[in-house]
Length: 49
Image (cartoon, rainbow, N blue to C red; front, side, top):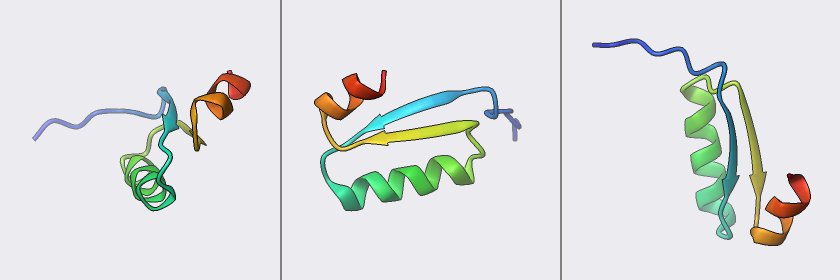
């Protein structure tokens, strides 16, 4: 099984459903993604950028 280093990745997760957003954020953190930012909608995502 291949091992990947995801610590150099930065992900902006945009999801309006809070439960799904939390599940995906936890999953990405378990994969040890470098930085995970979340937004509840497109407007929040644009403001983050």
